[in-house]
Amino acid sequence: MLRIITEPWSARTELRRIRERFDDPEIREKESLVREIIDQVRLTGDRSLVDYTEKFYQQSLNLQQLKVSGSELDAAYQQVSQDLLNAIAIACAKMEAFHRQRLPKAWVQFPEDGTVRGKRYQPINSVGIVVPDGKRAYLSLLLQQAIPAKIAGVKRIVMVSPADEDLRIHPAILVAAQSVGISEIYRVAGPQAIAALAYGTKTIAPVEMIAGIGDFYTNLAKKLVSDHVKIDYLSITSDLVIIADNQANPRQLALDLLAQAEQYSLAAAILLTTDKALALIVQEEVQKQLQVHPQRLLTEKAIAHYGLIVVVESLEKAIELSNLFAPTHLSLMIDEPWEKLSSVRQSGTILLGSTTPKAVADYLGCPVGVETFLDSATLIEYPADSFASIAHNLQILAQAEGFTATDEGIEYRGQDKT
Image (cartoon, rainbow, N blue to C red; front, side, top):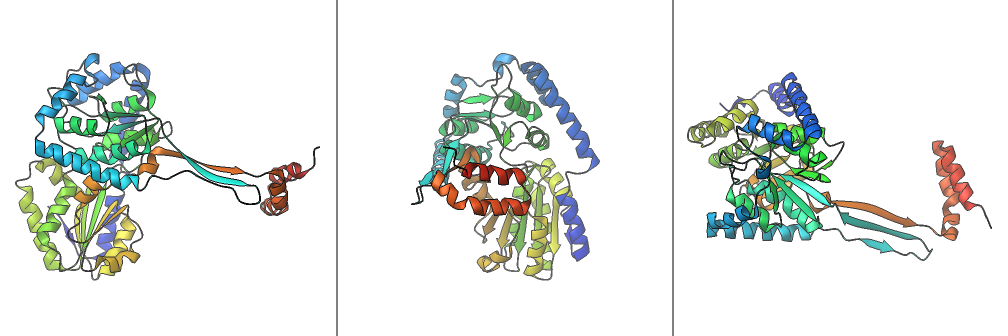
């Protein structure tokens, strides 16, 4: 049951519990298991990939089946409707257009004093993209990562995803992957897949970055290998906070909360509203929709543990609570949302208005950008004359901070050594 809270102190306590849901002892036990899996893959490579796939996914997989074949990739196009092919193409085109605008360009300036200043950007060489469930068409999660990587110029993009009981990955996923230039796809998932991408095996060469999200164990593995390989972000799962006034549509609100909860059992779906009557209608609608939801078990678990409706006295109080929670996604389902935007301090993505559901961010937006897949370097050159003109000021700054070697290094460079 989706709970309703009206007391401010209870709301803050519950929001803190949800925000800190990854710090309990049960989570630490899971972390120990994930570390063990990672260590085993580092030691035994492909053998562990096969063994853990059999153990956790009850699939009989041999080494030759780890990689999806070219014939399977070709066959996927015959298993997808023309409407879905068109939808994938449109989504790719819109996302590519969006990310091309964000592609930073190198620049160099040559001021009259002879100095050189600039910025250089280079794509990383390889990235591994995690798609959480090969049985379902998780197109948004794939495209959100793959398209900015493609626009950035990453040469090698690898995809890992679990297969179904017949060792098949959803054909729509295979088609979408090929649409963005991915042909290196492996039937592996979980912490073992993350370990393979980070450290490499005989079959899977290591990558420079791991992107995308999976189940809790997968995302925890990303966190644990982040000292060895780059990752896109550390969030273990996503949160959605909706702020709604009495003009909001209760069915829309219920569907948006369920849309968040159906993705992960640890997903947080929270409604902050000024209208108690609206809260009761949303609560009833969520319960009604859960009864017929195809993913009822997972969705109901997320709603029961990390779903919440908080009735607040004003929109200002709602924004204050949202800022404290700092959600990955914030939806402003209120009249004139732009007027309240300046008060929002902590949120990854802000969705404005009733016609902008989180699905827009999932399918047409992206939690990462092109810059995620670029290495940048600042370029600076100071000729002798130009350096001499600023050396004294630099020494004063170094002396103020007590940096003796810095001070002496500046002075030494300013000396005439001819």
